[in-house]
Amino acid sequence: MIMTKLYKLSAPGWVKEYDNDIDLRAELYSHICGACRIGCREQMGDGEVWTVWEPVNENSDIYEMLATACGCEYDIGEEEDRSEHYVVSERK
Image (cartoon, rainbow, N blue to C red; front, side, top):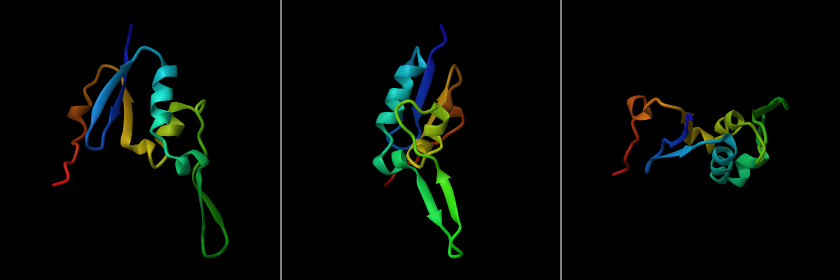
């Protein structure tokens, strides 16, 4: 069985393993704030409205959650080691 890993990239970082997408999705959603859950739209000076990210809920696709401002702190993977790709910054 392939385990899917959820990586928290911002400090303090962590890695959690899941054997199904349902549990991983629930964990990721628990870290999405209320503002990210309702989505974000910005109105430009000329009145045009841009969608920055769509609203998400507990049943949203994992990649949609990762595309929110909160979700960008996370990544998913299987066997690869994210420490090879990311460096977690430490605030001094």
